[in-house]
Length: 189
Length: 189
Image (tube, each protein chain N blue to C red):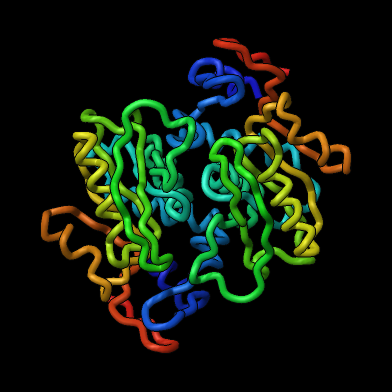
């Protein structure tokens, strides 16, 4: 998506070797109208495959997931990083290691919100090492739902997070794919 | 907002004495089109006061905040519950005790996203004891920004979270106000 690549070049900041800061429009401050356009673009790529539910994980995936849900007219479920008092009944869970936070979290989804009748599209802001995405795929499988694929805003392909899942046949669509980052230079695929 | 009160009565579940589970449409599963309408309603209540920024806290506030941001055409900032590697520079922070999780968190906002030139509308899904709202108000004040007020989806008035802030002159608009909950019965204001 050209607009996104331009926005990354204009506003993105490379931190260290492999961290890209885009918190001016994606994961701390959000540009709502731009987020809506990204959601429409991702929805378009998965049009006609009968999606019944969007699944993401809190917190940075929620705004984009909401935009995709609006475009496809389906509910959005966000996995929780801490189980809430209000999560009653059966819960699906997966372990997710965050490289940017250096911590292991258990993400959970209440079973009543994803089930065997669903065709699920996973949405997230970043795909790097693929830990969050693998956790969400695991939850879709635990639920017995059909997986339509995953829509990602920014994929850092040099961290290889999509390779295993693509090899398993999971369809992953990313709005911007970064092949390489050097000090001050971002190489898109 | 009549549609919200009806949705709460149809889908809300009272847990214990004072917890209301509305995770089928508000804070685990989200109804995007309904969220958009709630955002438009909140935006309408604060129309004409020159809002330049929406401030919320991850995670459940984000979808509603995004809907308000879309309606008012202004950016949304969500306070983080854990400081991210990517948060560089000055950070405003506040301590927030969560009664539903029984834990203290430090919420943070990077200074470059809220400043003295801003008129801020705070958005959140629930107002109960008011801890999160007080933390967000503190951040607006630390930033030297003007506070337009707070827009809340569900206020549980029997937990008195809005009283102190209203006494200080903070304008709080809630789409549904609950005065009392009894087993199986929700009393709206």
